[in-house]
Amino acid sequence: MSALAIDVTGLVKRFGDKIAVDGVDIHMPKGEVWGFLGPNGSGKTTTIRMICGLLRASAGEGTCLGYDIAREADQIKMSTGYMTQKFSFWNDLTIRENLEFVARLYRMTPLRQRVDETLETLGLTDRQHQQAGALSGGWKQRLALAAVTMHAPKLLLLDEPTSGVDPQARRDFWDEIHRLSTNGITVLVSTHYMDEAERCDHIVYLANGKLLTEGRVADIIQESGLVTFRVEGDSVRRFAGALQQLDGVDHVSYFGNALLVSGTQREIIEHAVEAATDASVRWQEVRPSLDDAFIALMARAGGDRRVHA
Image 1 (cartoon, helix red, strand yellow):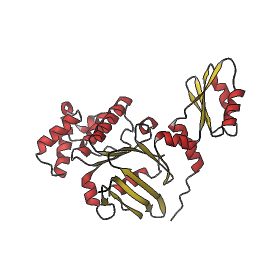
Image 2 (cartoon, helix red, strand yellow; image 1 turned 90 degrees about the horizontal axis):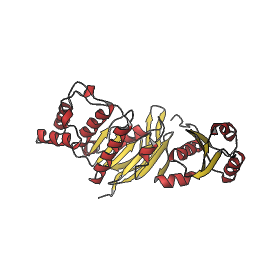
Image 3 (cartoon, helix red, strand yellow; image 1 turned 90 degrees about the vertical axis):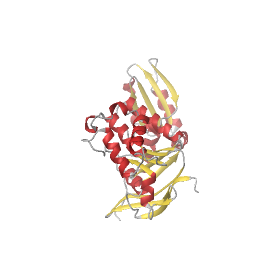
Image 4 (cartoon, one colour; image 1 turned 120 degrees about the horizontal axis):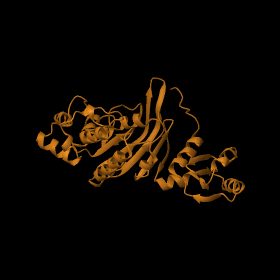
């Protein structure tokens, strides 16, 4: 059997004359947690739906959990859990009723025991009789995760699952993702949060329907070639305008009483630092962030050049 949970090559999806996904390759080993990143409209959701058999690819080929994505979509659906961006369960049912409905769809037996176990595992037992529509975003997210994992899938596909929830709920959710991974489940999760991406074994970044880059966080930052300096002190914003005008300075960002200045040309960045130095500020070279790396890579990728088919 293949050691890859997802093994797809050249995935293309057209909607009429619009190319949404253009030649994406993903080769994801079993048991890992991968982050799937990219701006809105980059093709992440469409790619996920092709992988799990909900959309037929216009071109390309591959397997998911060893099943052919074109011919064995039903087997893929039974072996994966797909959590959509929008809460997609029933607001007028309780947590327990939602899970009982899902258990019946998968013909789980004994049904009551399976539901009880799922409620306990996801910390939902005390809230099991609450209506789903009355839950906060974090508890809805936990219910959705319970529903897509209760049939013991081998692969989880999570589409921006933490959008709109508070930081504690996001942290709890990621702790659960890594617990599931420890138990042998492979996880592909799309996100806009760079701190979440840094919790992944590997990240894949889509832009304009194409795979822009992939790898470990440290490798992608290294690949960006960025040099970053941080300046702290009183009224550091007074330097921002002049720094932004310099050729070779790619990005200037504010963080409280500090500025981060990034670019790929070290000599220019160091000269800018020297020119903007006085006794009231302190400059220090720092590790570029993943956010900075992606901004730089997006700038090099240019605008959306997806052409009509």
